[in-house]
Amino acid sequence: MGDSSSTTGKPVALITGANRGIGLGLAQRWAHDGWQVIATAREPQSAEGLWSLKQDFPDLQIEQLDLGDSSSIAALVSTLAERPIDMLINNAGIFGRFPLVENISTQRFGTLDYEVWAEVMRVNCFGTVELTEALMPAIEASERKTVITLSSAAGSIGGHQAPAIPYTSSKTALNKAMTTIARTVKDRGVLVAIVCPGHVRTRLGLGGGEIEVDESVSGLATLIGSFTIEDSGTFRRYNGDHLVW
Image (cartoon, rainbow, N blue to C red):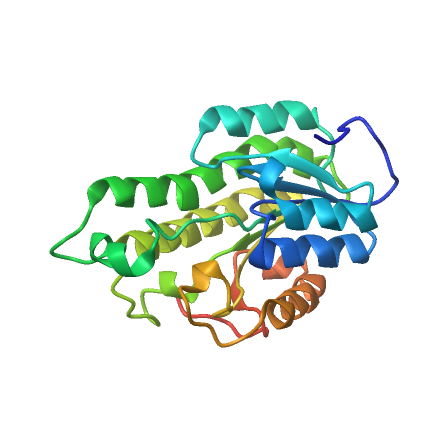
């Protein structure tokens, strides 16, 4: 895919799940702002948006990553060969089985599908944490030392009542894991923050949504740009609001 040995002199951002929606928007924004972007997708050969973006930003590096597969995570880390990563943006995630209408019962109490729950938890929580742990030496070796994880207000116990147990619990678990990681690495100068992109009109927005991708990405870029180490472990909405846990 990309040339992991190339050096551009730019800060490096690795963005997961960058083939469409918010991830693609983040890749475009960070590339436009002068970063060297490593963009991952489960099926990079069909990530048309990324290949189109690469026409404008030739140093965009496109790599394969499936967070549900430990061997895929290990392969990506090996490909990067300990290159310093200034910012890891954990964006990739799944809701569960699609089409949603035909499969929503798998998420609800009384008709739960535990295989769906295990898969959602594996990708959204375990895979994200596994990648973050594997890349931590590369993050610590960088100048900016930043980990940003896109979660969801749906993972808030105190502020959200969505009935989709597998998806919401995966985000709750992810939030807890990331706050623990934030405390663990703060004294090493690593910033770990959790952000909610809002209810965006994307495939994962489940047919609804209140804002467009561009508005979410713009807000996230402003918010992330304002973070200091003292913001490590916080949970913020794209517009800067603090979210309840």
